[in-house]
Amino acid sequence: MKKLIKMAIKETTALAILALVEIIVLFPFIKTAVLGILYGSAFSILGWWLMVKDVKSFAEKGSLFKFGFLLRYFLYAVGMGTAIFYGKLFFAGTALGILNLKLSLYIFGRWLGENTTNQI
Image (cartoon, rainbow, N blue to C red):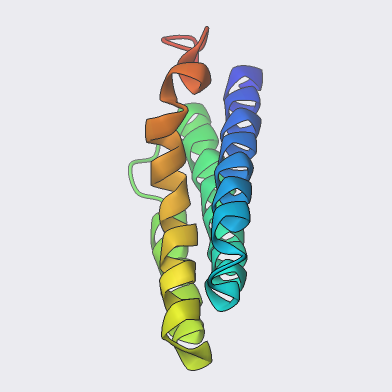
């Protein structure tokens, strides 16, 4: 299980690096979207840690369905639903921030997978 936590910390770091690069690139042009990226990335990190918790409990107990799955998607819906009230650019930034989880897995996938294959 320590490998799972180590991998989760690596993914959180990768997600933060990706969000930081996006913020640096977009800040001079679209300040509202930058705030949305921060907002969406926070939801993304929270969703990632909830997923890690679900995987950990699945490995220990073996139950097939977890409430955490629904909770994560409800969390994303709340994030997107509240973001729309702040404008289109904030909403687009929030969507990008939530997608940062997927993007960071694609970009940093090799680094994240080092020495963890079949050891979780």
